[in-house]
Length: 88
Image (cartoon, rainbow, N blue to C red; front, side):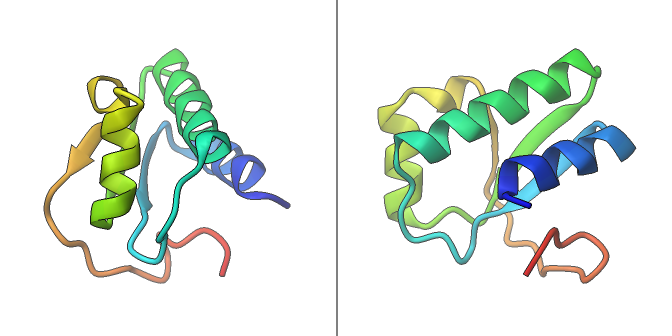
């Protein structure tokens, strides 16, 4: 399954989702659209989507898209936990 489906499945279990983007080096408009959809879905479920560990380039893309007003960006550096990681 793709990332969107994996995240939707995770949201179905718990409406609070943190996406660790530490290994993401580029985020195009399709990726931003996925984040927007997931954010909308989390809010519909009275939950919250957060993104963590954004590289500078990824953060710039999010800021350029003005989605920093939509998504809560974590500035802390989370150590990935095996039980929290979706996919490989």
